[in-house]
Image (cartoon, rainbow, N blue to C red; front, side, top):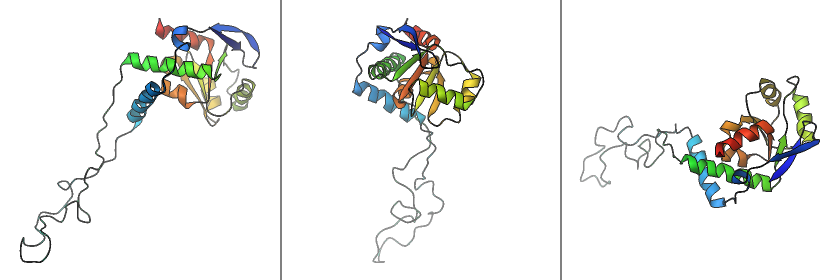
Length: 206
């Protein structure tokens, strides 16, 4: 399987080989949904916390005697039935991490890449190196590559100039090939991947 290789001006300069083990997968909506659910749950901070009736201040004295008042029995004014009382089944602080086997996460990444490649949303470039960290230079390069909307640039290593040039472009992000995951691939509209990043990414399936 091959794909076009472009330069930063959007001109075709060759082709790149794509591994069938990665880009030839048949995507499964159910499997990708499972991964996205686990990934999204693990991004939650888990800091929301409500107090139960045993944690709310007060409520030590019985509001009124048990019988002969004509009112319902009550043992505490901090009951969940009362105003200012405890909360039943509310959120509790303490993040619970959902685990997914590394093999399944890698399979989800392959399926996400295969789905985006089938839709024509992955652009392979020789390099995204900039001579100077200018936002307009990067914006012009992305327009030449046909990238509009949410764009994810996949690099083989850190690039300070690209990071400075992209931070003022809404919807444009950069990540390393070693950090790429299925959720990031599915969340973007266009994926710009350099040739060294593609080689580093495919090495995960060797």
